[in-house]
Amino acid sequence: MSLLEIKNVSKIYGPLKALDNVSLKVENGEWVAIMGPSGSGKSTMMNIIGCMDKASTGEVLLDGVDIAKESDKKLTAIRRDKIGLIFQQFHLVNYLTAVENVMVSQYYHSMPDEKEALEALERVGLKDRAKHLPSQLSGGEQQRVCIARALINHPEIVLADEPTGNLDEDNENIVLDIFKQLHREGTTLIVVTHDPEVAEEAQRTVVLEHGRLVKEIINENFTD
Amino acid sequence: MKRQKMFLKMITASILRRRSRMLVALLAIAVGATILSGLVTIYYDVPRQMGEQFRNYGANMIFTPASGERLTDDTVSEALSQIDSANVVGCAPYRYEAVTILERPYMAAGVDMAEVEKTSPYWSINGEWPSQSGEILVGTSVASTFALSVGDDMTLTYDLGAPEGATVDEAKNGISENVNEKSFSVVGILDTGGNEEDYVYISLEDMEALTTEKGGYDVAELSVSANSDELSAYVDSINEDGAVSARLVKRVTQSENTVLSKLQALVFLVTAIVLVLTMICVATTMMAVVAERRKEVGLRKALGASNKSIIFEFMGEGLLLGGVGGLLGSVLGFLFAQMVSANVFNSSITFHFALVPLTILVSVLVTGLSCILPVRSAIDIDPALVLKGE
Image (cartoon, rainbow over all chains, first blue to last red; front, side, top):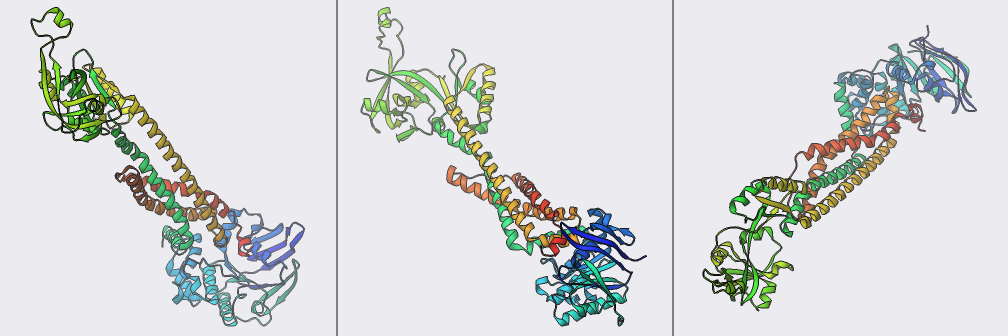
């Protein structure tokens, strides 16, 4: 059974079809990139997989459970327990330190543990910046805090929306290296990106256009 | 780290590290709590303050004999025992006798000058209060009739009644040789604008010497510091015994009641308005806080925060602000009330410790109520829309 299976999913906003009969399978431990121009439905797909939106039609099976039919309360629980989110804008709580930002995710999931949060920051090379506020961190550092926060609860899937969109090349490489490391450790990654170089790092790339899945590219040269 | 500790850390960090916005909310709550605490202090202190002011307008209770007998020290003391001694500002017994001054009839009052000073502080004396035997206080009207001024001497003549052995005609015509005369030195001229100006006032001892008769009062005027209900209870209690007939000086007690109830109603109204304004101010600020933190709320929901968690966090911040604002307000409110009391009533007030928890409780409640709408709008935030920057 695939970890994630999207079957004939459409998302309709009035006259607009943001997603049109899309189907996709993601296996456990796989690294998939979703590419496409603006308005192609990438974000809608990310929101549906991330349990922040519901499909108008079709099935979205996560671990065999159709999340398209779940209540908002249940979707919140699934998001909390199974999904790690990484955002282009980082979205850190600006009045909490790096380690506290990581602990917020623990707080909603189970029990805050500062030691564990510091270890997560150490994994992304930020242990010495743990007590800094987001305003005292560079963009790359903020994104790494965001990654540490996404990983802290050991999610089944990490969803990253344009994770390198706001980073310079050096920081982009740091983030991609972290993703490679995560993939080696067996984390399932779904990365939405505009950047072909980022997509090339994934095992598989699916391309969306006008809400339709138009192409699927297997990266033959993929290496961990 | 326990969840509660993390919760406290989040709400305190939100307040302490976002000082400017939270300072506005805290200021709104503290100002509201200050005025609330100050006005409640004044509300409860006004009757005391006003009571003291009203005591300047003279006696508010009168004792008269219940039967034909005059009042005595014993009957007055017994009646006084029915009144809480701490509330008795003064009790001035009066003994009235008809006298003649240069053969013109006048009323003289034998009084305890020290007590009259307490019960009638509004009396304006040109000169001094009589302090020893042989001194007299003369009403303005009497003084002008006889062109008396401070330092002059005058004589009071008291008719002791027809002497034994006088003829019927002599008694009928009131012609009597049986009179007693006493010379007094005028030490003060009394100006009240009322009937008191038609009298002369001497000490009770001088009255006894003049009349050659000991004891007994016609009336006792009392100044009692109490509200109208307490005064009525005192009167009822005294009248039950029967020896003394007590009644209230309605002119004073009723106007005191009217002014007090209007003043308290005004303070109550202002307090209610201030509470509503505080609620509006806090609600507006919290609305702004929620609007400003839409993305943060969206993020928290995206991370798996339930609606209950979001409610707890915003309410926690609001209630913490309410508590701190209430604490500040209860201290500042006392200073505010003290300032008002000093400027308006020219006296100080006592700090009511019970008002501290009350003010904090009301501030927390008001803040909690004010947060309901903003928090409702927070839980309606859609994480997907917010994270996309819409």
